[in-house]
Image (cartoon, rainbow, N blue to C red; front, side, top):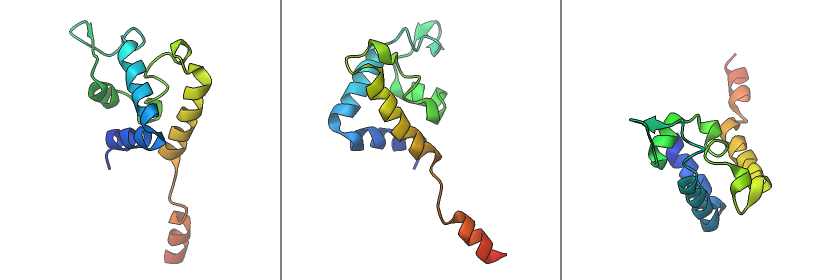
Length: 101
């Protein structure tokens, strides 16, 4: 599964409200994302943002957490969950390599 689809699925699995809150805040905060420009105009496209952003920064770079109704702690906790998914590894990978030795 591609990283963009995995992220969208993650937000939706966290709850419909989580996905909607993320999209609403993303769409409101063009200033925060002003570094993603095409021809000098801030790009509003979520697809463009997800293409240009490191997967581990999808939540942390999307908008200013402080300026949201949910505040920073809400987004920080969601970001921690997302980072765990980004960096999870197959727990059997080392065991399989040892067996092959």
